[in-house]
Image 1 (cartoon, rainbow, N blue to C red):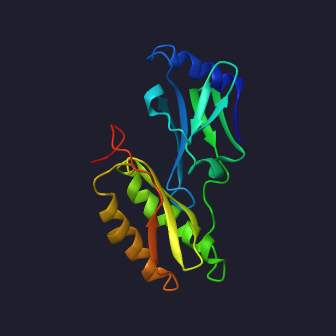
Image 2: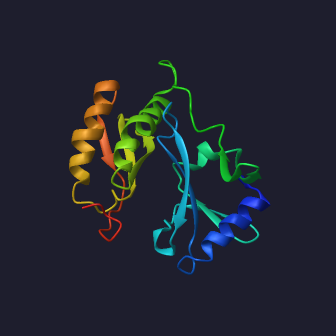
Image 3: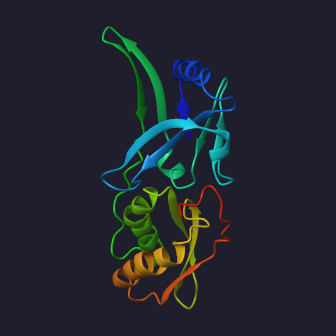
Amino acid sequence: MIRITNAAQEHFAKLLSTQEPGTQIRVFVINPGTPNAECGVSYCLPNTIDATDTELKFDTISAYIDNISAPYLQDAEINFVTDKLGSKLTLKAPNVKMHQVSDDAPLIERVEFLLLSQINPQLASHGGQVKLIGITNDMFAILHFSGGCNGCSMVDYTLKTLIEKKLLERFPELKGVRDSTEHHHGKHSYY
């Protein structure tokens, strides 16, 4: 999925040695699948690892990737380059910007694209995200919330006034949305 060069691994290992024990790195994409997509790397404390994260183990470090970012980080490379101007970390991810799906694409692909390109960037500001699980035969979009949305006291409001409203405006063939998440309120919840 992601290639992290030896030079970058050494750089990260040096940075991580000054952090709380167990801290690793997180590689993520902001606004995945949109023209505004951006990649980033941050510290990943042990208590911020989600059960759905993918762990990539390297020689001296681990990198965690959330399930929304993972498909966009295929063929990505992180390198640490030193030249006469100094040193810098480079992150190349050729697949972060997904082309908009066509109007005649299957409904499930069009709904996924709208969630990724319009809804998740809004939810990300509160540490949340939503994923399409599927569309039922009776035309309900089944969604799953994670991150700050899981257990948030505003999730029903978000589901109906933000997500369902936008999906029904864009896809009149849908009858509504349903939340399949087993919400557990905790420190991760936004509200």
